[in-house]
Image (tube, rainbow, N blue to C red; front, side, top):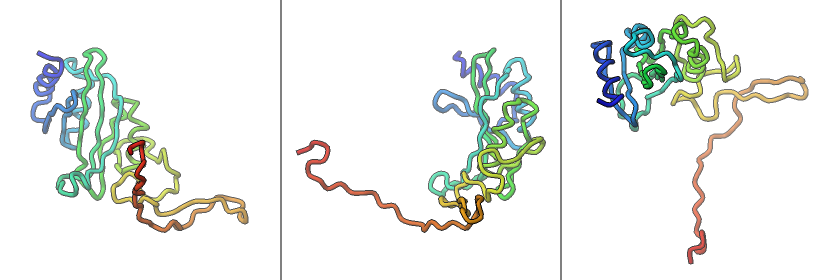
Length: 198
């Protein structure tokens, strides 16, 4: 039995009906769990001796709003966590969809893995996902006065405001975006000798 088969068997044995699905893609398992089971499942993945995921190596938000050219009809936001078991020498990706698209909220796993702290702040900053129980949930990559969440698919490419230094006021000021939206058309090369072809 391969290492991945062993992990899948153990996941199904230990977690049972708390797993919505377990799929293999690109040599790695992805376990999808319900939001109501997320915190308990993550604790079990860390503490159960047959699983022993000691390390959380990544956490990110995902916006599925235009997944598959707009034909996707599931929940919009998900949290994806990558776990590593050094003792068992295996990895696992855990995906959990936020139950409310208008107000995406998930429990924080910062008490389970301290490494989740800045990753959850990043997912909050860029996607607007709220992590309940996080003790310092504030922006980490954008300015504190930033409006919106720039990795959401409906966020405008130009943003909502721009900042610049005003020499008269001798300070940085915020103002509405002055960039005109434009269509970018790729340049067509019509040279006969382009690329050395004759």
